[in-house]
Length: 223
Image (cartoon, rainbow, N blue to C red):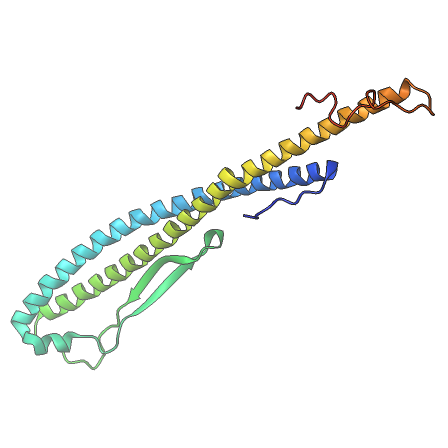
């Protein structure tokens, strides 16, 4: 927020303050609109995070069971032969609502076994490999949802701070400055009216005595 107000004097200053007050109020409305959008995104991804966490826990438990069974049947060497020849890859989809970029989802691509790979010794190895692939896919989806939640959370906090600063500090300062400027203009207009009425009741060459001359604040009611 700017420090001091440097409004020009007179009616130009009143217009200056009115314009900035309208701008500040419009800015507060935009921030409130952004806050609702960011809050909705945060709530949506929190639900997604819960679902992906449950899916990851379930698939991880299944992968653990099949891996233990396969290890008992085929041994550690058999588990090694069931491993993929190349690492899995992850593709991330990004979204950018309101200028904020965050992961909207992720897809894990688990490579298929090589065509010339030796056949597995037991069906448990194939089941373990498939279960581990599903667990990896679920883990990637949950990681993307977890990251997506953090972004709107940070944006929500920052937007709340900005909106609070505008509504609780900047707008009241402008309103107070505008009220003071309007009061000064009203006093000046009253004083000018008194001078004009006095001039209309006296001759053009007649000068008022010190007791008759209206002061700049006369008639305003201010002490």
